Length: 436
Image (cartoon, rainbow, N blue to C red; front, side):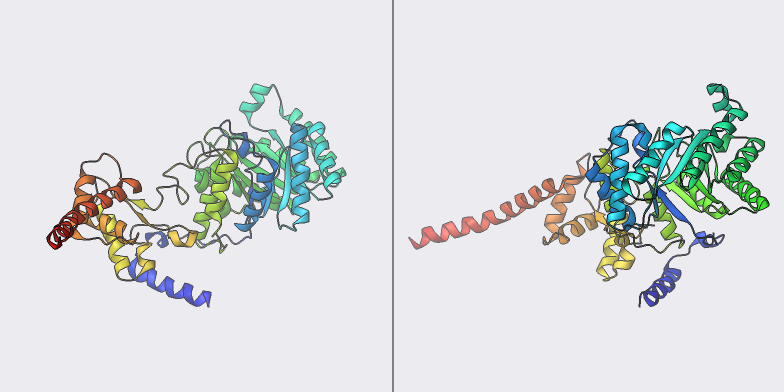
């Protein structure tokens, strides 16, 4: 039944929307892929967020599963007592609630960092993947005073220790997108030889372009193929140049198996790839068919738990995402609704169908509005939109520098009604006097 509805909507869309995106369409990646949520580890490294209490972290785990996330970074247990205890509690919760989430933990390529991951596995009774990281770029080597031999040595020690302890090891090269291929070749070959089952390509400072992302992923795939190894590739991106989402899509096109992202795009500096915007685009591009009815709720929970406000103009979840005070826009939406066509009303001035994600089109009244705005606003609240009332409200709005608040519009309605009732009250009083 759902398939039939989808086909009808597809035919209808082709009739009323000429989609230039389909001229050079990107087909879904041939490989299956997963999403890894980094909100509770890399995301909370932002200097502007609050590390949520455990109860809210557990709520977020439930919402991550609800939106189709497959794996989740539950922390860096070597960071301290609270970090360790939260990791254990989350791993236990995932196990107890039988969530389909695969937990993983971050650790430097230092045994002292990895040992707490092993202890967390033992204490929780739940397997946890190890993501062990070290900087690989020449600029990091220069600043840290490292050479390639040092990086190789510490990487081997970390991977060997993790494998010996029964952990599935992902090898993370920080700043991969600014690392030389000859160095990555040695690092990746060595990591694979010592048992790493994943290579994580990191755009740590948001340096990469989509073309650079594809080039790196394709180069890595060729290296793995040449070795005949069964090794997965992850992409971990940041948003410093605003390329977070598009780079994640480029990485998937090029063949990665898992993409990392954070709710609301939180993270250091300008943040990580946004999980919610990535999911939104994967859905609209037809690359996934997840139920995303909880996506806005997930973003709102990240916002409240991390004390990080959702920007008003933020796509999908922002207050203004489906809100207009412009006369032409409101008129088109109102005409579509007057036709009894909710599908059309949701798309005539929106690339994102609000109803599919639990939102709705909102029409406001301001200095750029027309009569359509006022009539739509009043009718949607069950108020008779008489021409006289609409004119009065619109005339007031034209003198305002801001969109009128609901309280202001309702006050104008009450004032109009009160004035309109004055002659009636006067006539009734005169009638009572005449009777006396």
